[in-house]
Amino acid sequence: MNKNMAHTENTQITETAEQNWGWREPEPAPQRKRLSFGVLPTVALMTASAVAAGAITGVVLDQQGGDSPVVNSLQQPNVQQTTHREAPEGSTEQVAQAVLPSVVSIQVASAMGGEEGSGSIISSDGLVLTNAHVAGNPNSQLQVTLNDGSVHPADLVGADAATDIAVIKIRDVKDLPVISFGDSDQVQVGQSVIAIGSPLGLSSTVTTGIVSALNRPVRASDTGGESSLIDAIQTDAAINPGNSGGPLVDMSGNLIGMNSGIASLSSTGQSGSIGLGFAIPSSFAKRVADQLVKDGEAVQPMLGVNVLRDDLNYPNRPQVRGAVIGGVSPDSPGQRAGLKEGDVVTRLNDRLIDSADALIAAVRSHDFGETVTLEVTSQGESQPHQVEVTLTED
Image 1 (cartoon, rainbow, N blue to C red):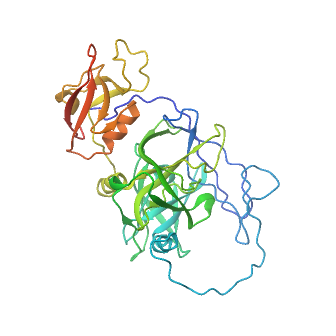
Image 2 (cartoon, one colour; image 1 turned 90 degrees about the horizontal axis):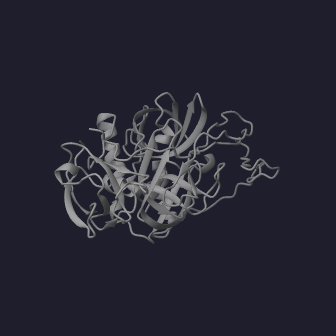
Image 3 (tube, rainbow, N blue to C red; image 1 turned 90 degrees about the vertical axis):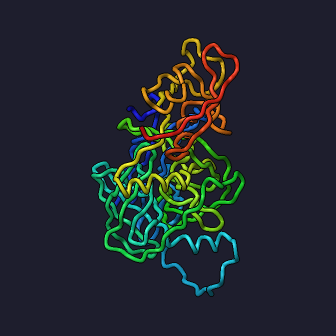
């Protein structure tokens, strides 16, 4: 059975590309991808993999191509002795000290150039959770820089482009510090969070913010036509190109999300944080990562229906806002539950469904074997009815 629930459409994508591996400042990065965000159609999303820049004696970052560097070159810095002190309990400082050792920078070299992203160590023998758009190309060469500065080669274990999740394995390491997984299902809007990663190649960068929204369906398509859709945690913690794959943690240092994309006011080029960052919930990321480690691939729970992303002209559709079913696969969970072509799904459990992507993201947020309740309005009906569907992978 076809496991894709939505027709794909051409969406605009932007992703940073070429990276200098030498000692000179980078040339302007060629535009390869641009992401669009269905909730805010005038706002472009871009994946946050970075062009690393600069030299050991200093970092010069001028994204606009002007004469004034963002960070001036440093010559013979004065070294001052500092006294170590215990970080206050529950502080950003304490969380950073606990989490930073389990965060890595990932350098990627391919025929299309070099990129840099971030990742979280999830096993003491070197498994790292990151984004598929960072490290999912099997033809790329991977290199990982640990928090202590040591550099190691790495290999791709598995990647799932549909969910933008990948796992890589650092070679010949042991006893690495491992990040602690939190329960992203318990995350609340307004709670404090910390983002850690390597924005613009600046490793071990820590930024703070709050969870500003939950259950944002964020879709991106690459130039190869593969589409990813995440049920994102939205945060105003500063996330920039290079943070992709890095952790979003709570104030106990637990991983609640994997930073994956940012919204941009620019539709033509690379941009930085405007306070709209998006992270893949950790519970979902762990489920996919476990499949990738075990099987090298991942599958998602499905209704077995095809939902329309362009449904305004669908004939005789009920005049309600939701996800319009364009077809139902034989012997699927949707067919067994009585769903029909032309039905409009407006709610899944207590979650409002206002688009095809919202339904896909909501279904993927549940696990295999779970039973969900859908609120459905059928053609010719003025009132919705409820149906129960048990999710399967086929």
